[in-house]
Image (cartoon, rainbow, N blue to C red):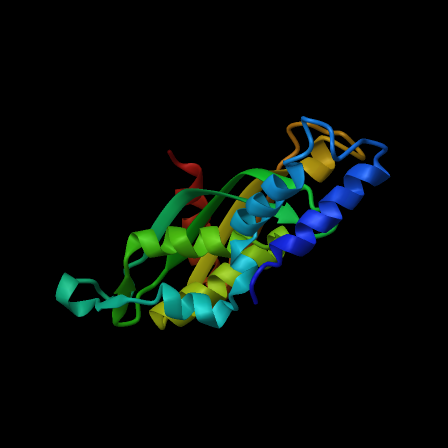
Length: 196
């Protein structure tokens, strides 16, 4: 579904009026168009389902040719993304995503993991759902049921408004397959995520 920039411009103009400002003044005259272009960029992921993302970023390579054993783990840490909370449309920032998976015959390019995390985050979201969606897309793209996703982020709905607690960080974990069942694997991923 394409993002309707014309509708966004109309509504942003209405918000400016509702705030008591003049949308025709020099500093605001182009604001509706700028916001529409920004929303098209930062909410790009809303145009795709998780299955479509898995297809878009699902180019894999045979793991056996690389000498990868069945229990080897791929772990990419500190992928920087941002998202917007669906409750307040407030920015989730300083967001770092770490993804681990155990290859089942196929591996995915490392940059594809970053692209998946980035695109999933570009939606009106809950942090918990970001982890679940990334795990789903990575699992489907790689053919591996064994996926872990760790996310830490600051939420401006907590740091800049409401309770106003700067520095508060939210950490979520998503474990699928072997990561869900094996506490040792969970601990290994958590430890790898802590070490620099």
